[in-house]
Image (tube, rainbow, N blue to C red; front, side, top):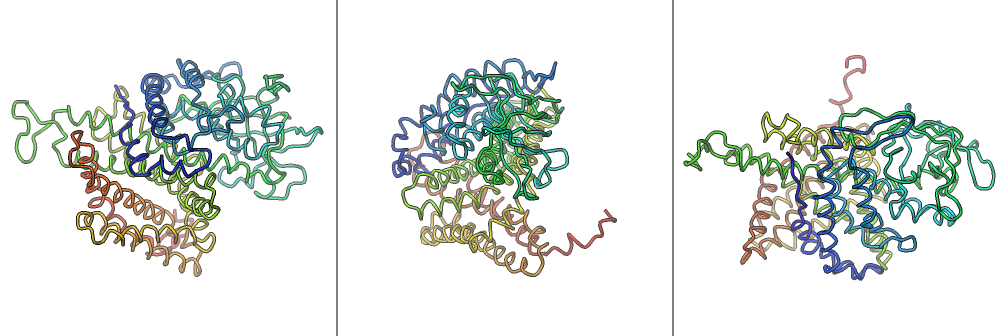
Length: 595
């Protein structure tokens, strides 16, 4: 039976010691009240909800799945009660606009709550996470009337929100979509079409479901420049905000899936459904990206969240499972065999997962702080630099976190041996659930291409060069500190490889555009490892300063994990540089017919 305990101590380390969140929030108008006295109790209460209410339903959701009967979707046993507890606790409004019932707290705080939700029950957390993304899009792009009628109910979770993009013939290439919308006057439109893979498109958790649908107006230009976004509710809202008549939007079926079985994945039919334009005509992608960019960071976090649960259970199993003897001789001579934690290969798998998890948590915290800076800092120069960082690292978080998360769930399953293949231990569910995160919200290869082909050259390379300069300054400022040499010198070497790769890619792309596509995956992983190295070097510096007198072992473990990362994982930057600079020829030479 799997277990989960929220990693509160490490979250507090990232927030208070690594990021200096209280100081940072004090400099952001509107966040001055977000002190440690407020932050820590929120995290502790979220942990109770996730450990005691959400997590016990995780296996139930996987075993039962959602059902589709008489045109309605039913969620697994217990999901409705857990969702009600989430709503009654006010968790949906944590960072939302106070004008509509939100609490207006920093995004940086909410990501740690979101990690716990996803770790405890990824399927259930998908419903709540999508609703938060809908709140962001509607608050930013909706008319005053739409915000008045719909936003408060979305913020408090009474109603839920979903985004509806994919059609059977178009996923990544949304320019091919066929769903259409026609004006019927009075600000209303008739929306007609079919969408697939709509997570939470129908369910029995909330009183209403608000669909954000991409469609084309009759005069729309071709491609993505002709896409508009429409709010299409399951039940139309009355003037007082209460749910009114049923709209012509219906679930046609639900998918039977490899994982996240407690989350409904729906085929949605819009049969002349009443919808309302959100944002400007033909500018729907701009409006949808407000939601998608949040969701991409959330999906990236799913890799971390599931890998955290996998690590906790694998580490506990390795301490208890007796198999063989230590290579140096029995470590537990009074027992018939030693715990498998004594074996180097088991430790390799556990430390790989732990090192990635703690660096990912730190990096996501840093990116989330940039989100808050980009929206709340009074200095426009700071806001611009922060927005650059968010744009640069969104594909890294989405793609690398989900890649390593799936790899880590597999590693931790391997720790269990044959028991990892048996459902009662919970490990095989983690592997199945993690797999989708590499696919939805844009397949990871697309995000790598977005990074290499769009984010690197944007604004003349301003974002990537600013980031590399910041890492370079960090390394230079600590070169004389001998106690940090084992962390700073490897980081400096990895940074040099990133700089070389960036220059090579820029030059090669001018000659052959295929070089960008061929190098993009390796480049994304290279940037991710360097950014993880930066997080570990900073974390090690803090741990070194606090290890004396620490009777918990926290800082000692932090240093040991940092050493493992810089010695065993960061050197992979060398092979990534070699593969990405090998060029596109070996990738593109084979004729298509030969595959």
